[in-house]
Length: 263
Length: 247
Ligand SMILES: Nc1ncnc2c1ncn2[C@@H]1O[C@H](COP(=O)(O)OP(=O)(O)OP(=O)(O)O)[C@@H](O)[C@H]1O
Ligand SMILES: [Mg+2]
Image (tube, rainbow over all chains, first blue to last red; front, side, top):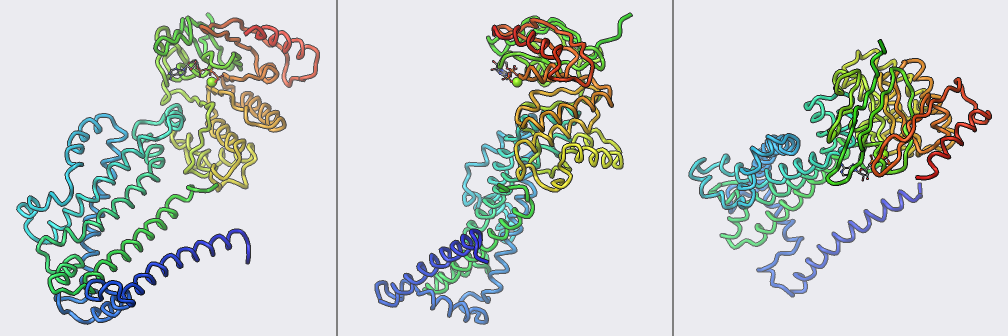
């Protein structure tokens, strides 16, 4: 069928794909023409070969790319899910109930400006070296956007809609669950997406905590072994998985909020 | 002994900072009465309804429902707000059920009323649509249906039919009269349309601004259903129009 809609979808895909092709094409060309030495920058095709190799080869970092990736995913998911489970309800409560706001805001405002990486030394002392410490760093990074977006989202609840429920006799709890939360959901989702981005972006830093496996560790080892192909492979996998999971979250969001973007 | 009024405003005064919106306003509305509030824009009609349902507090004076301050959890009242107020995340059907679910009415009864209301507002086929997919007038019909579904004792309507075309407007004017007859509710209806006020109400309260007071309360004894082209109807409409010409 050729109509406005398929045409614009086709155009979108075309632009997406040609953007990617150009990016990787220029990269490949720069290396092939010798503009940048192969020792410094590895071509995409070479990275792909390293990827195939790392599916089975455990040198120099002790594990296959699959093991590194799964370990990293698990780590990020733990930190990210925890931050959503705690951050979203906290933000919603703070945004809706004044006493909760007064109680939590000062603590939150003090914690908020501390960069996640600044937690590393104290976290190692308290939690020791290992997955808990790493997950905690990721948790801290993902927590702040969850809280802020849920908070702002529920504060923006339409006064008229609250009044509708109030005059119908809704209790404060009903107002929270039946009006506040649903109207905050789009912002909550945005927060969750930003959180995921922060969590994933903090991965390499978190895995500097003397871990022995994971994409961050693999990048470190690649650097020590002067293997730019491994460093770039690690970066590429982080980029691709990050983009894929963000896309997945967007799909989930569309499913969960069918009433958005109707017109 | 006179019957207790449904709504009683006693020396009601409301200021927003230095702005005096209502100045010492007093009046009663009887149980089961249909009253239209008419007044120029910004004279405090909406403010009055907000005071009545306790969405704002008066600066002084009192406004009572059944002799006590409004309590939405006890009083069965419903408010059609002036600005759009559908819940965008609920379907047409769930919007209509919203107030009934708040009131914890029995499921079967909710369904029965919802079918009836969907039919009345002509949105049965769009029951699973979201308000964002419908026209402004359809959205307003959802709001009206949501209010009617409560079979309220006290129904407050703030310029509810402003967005409607004439045909729909006539239809919904008759719908509110039907609801009024069937549920014996008390209705306060705000409108800028004098013909509408004369067509609907038993009494018109005319407000004048700066600061707002009730200038006149005009009884309308014409029997229902009213004929907008009858001489008595036109006479009354002209009389009220004359009174407000000098705003
Ligand atoms: N929350 C508020 N804070 C300050 N001023 C307000 C507030 N609400 C209303 N006002 C002012 O009070 C006056 C009366 O407003 P109100 O909305 O009651 O008028 P209205 O009669 O309903 O007008 P309209 O016919 O345009 O709906 C206006 O001058 C308005 O600006
Ligand atoms: Mg108004």
